[in-house]
Length: 93
Image 1 (cartoon, rainbow, N blue to C red):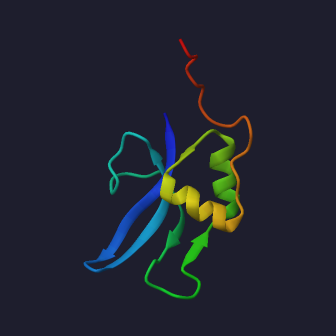
Image 2 (cartoon, rainbow, N blue to C red):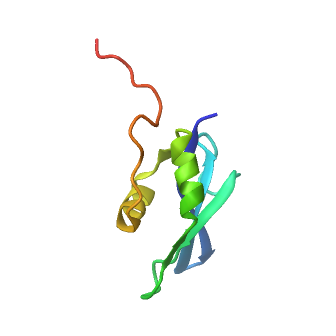
C-alpha cells in the first residue's frame, strides 16, 4: 500500500480547517485515512498548526510520500524527510 501524508478538509463553508492524515494514495481527499497526524487552521493568527512529530517521523521512515502543501508545513516545523526513505525511482532510458 502506498501511503501519503496530506490534508483532509474539514469545517464549514468559508471557515476551513484541515486534518493532516496518513492515507492510502488511492483514496479520495476526504475519504478513508489510516491515522490523524495533526491539524492546520489557516484562519487563526496564533498557533494555527498542531502536529504529532513522532508519528510523522515514523511514517516518513517507512516511506510515506508527502503532498506539496504538507511539505511546506513540515519545512516550517523543521521536519525533514530522511535520506533513503521513499519509493524506488525508474531508471532513465
